[in-house]
Length: 383
Ligand SMILES: *Cc1c(COP(=O)(O)O)cnc(C)c1O
Image (cartoon, rainbow, N blue to C red; front, top):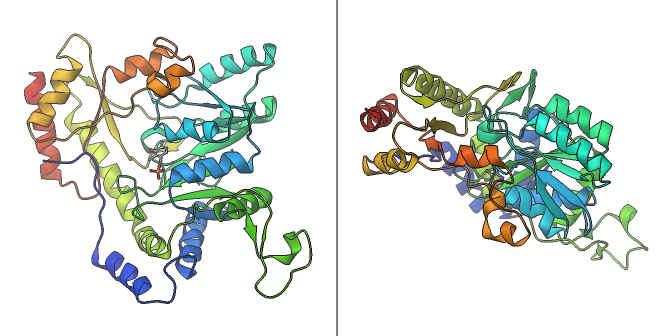
């Protein structure tokens, strides 16, 4: 079976983890700072806060921005549920902005239209979460302009997109946003087993995220309410969580960062090669967003209606040993969100996309020969 995604862990990664296991610190030690610094330097951003996963990073981002009951967050329906759930954790409401049919990212024209209506109805979002689908940045320049015009905060869900670039800068630089979140789940570009990270250029947001990551506890006398009772003293000044990453995970993440350019280069090679091999096959290939250079987490094709059905192609590939996947079931169609009032046809572009999309295998260790098998299987089904 050829998987759709797979981590690549080498001997240097394993040595880095073993070194931590033999050290004094399994958590909250120096590997965390090393990993945070390497990602911050790579992205060209001031602050990085490692978390136990990207879901926690999204939650902390929303809390740091002050999202609360009565608040409102907008995101893309074509994403993993966590991009929307983070608002619900804060007691805030969620709404969605339909996607662009070519890039599968949040549509900026839909966003503009929805903002105009929302202004009239006096129900503007507090936070917008653009999701860099498949590793390709959304149209962040325009989203940043809209944020200033309408007064909302922006959290980039870049779970797919570490290593991606946008208008000459790295995804994660937060040039057009308040915060950016990465995921280091094993299917993503680099992995720490489980893990996430928050990036920001704002000192206030990184301080709050750091505080809430560990129970809302401070050991810094400057932020305490009163003088310390003694050397043991700490104060809990907010209601936080245990959302920390361990040093074991951070060691793996920091070691993987040493190979990120190699990972992304291979993904770019494979996606360009898919484009070449599939150019005469009757499927729709992914389009590129202006100014964006994708990290290529996913390679998604769309099955053209009228040829073979979507499930014939999907099941046919799996039957031939190609473990394709589908990203994503539109979030608003999940039973939890339907209970909140969303229904079919609310976001028709994302729903049509869902009826046609298939994620082909794409990962660092995918060989050209295995990729040829994938393409061969697809051609056989479509003939
Ligand atoms: C993977 C993913 C997440 C969640 O990441 P975890 O690290 O597993 O919590 C959130 N958003 C998107 C778009 C993702 O792909």
